[in-house]
Each structure stands twice: as structure tokens, then as C-alpha cells.
Length: 75
Image 1 (spheres, one colour):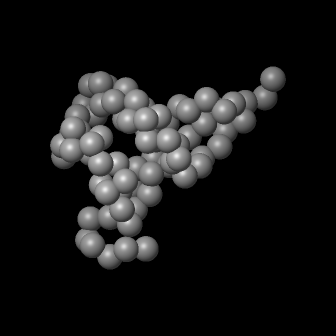
Image 2 (cartoon, one colour):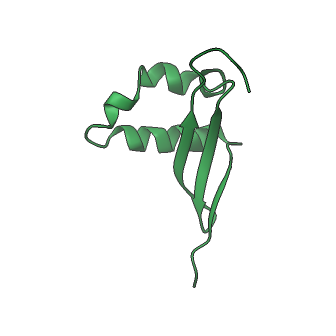
């Protein structure tokens, strides 16, 4: 069977939170987060003007792609 990879806008914040928590446990990944608890508490607000995407392999969520707007200009 061939693997099918897709990237979609996040429509389930609980899935995103779980993937982010999993990533945060990788040695060295903690430096990617200013405040993990703050980020997880308000994903919609934290990534406003940026993007929060979920990567899927055969319809199973496997990754998050999070792009934060840091200069205040919204797309």
C-alpha cells in the first residue's frame, strides 16, 4: 500500500496539542517554545495571523506545522 501524506489547516486543537506535547519531549526541542503552557492554553490566539497545520500520513495525524506572526502584521 502506498502512503498518502497530506497537510491541512488545523481543525482539532486537541490533536495539535497532543502532537506539540509529544514534540516538546524530544531532547533539545524545549528551546522551540517560549512558554509551552501558554501556547497550549490558547493555540488559536497564539498563532493568530500565522498558521497552524496538521500533517497526516494515511489519515493519521503525525506532525504539526506552527507559524507564529511575531511582528503584528496579519496576513
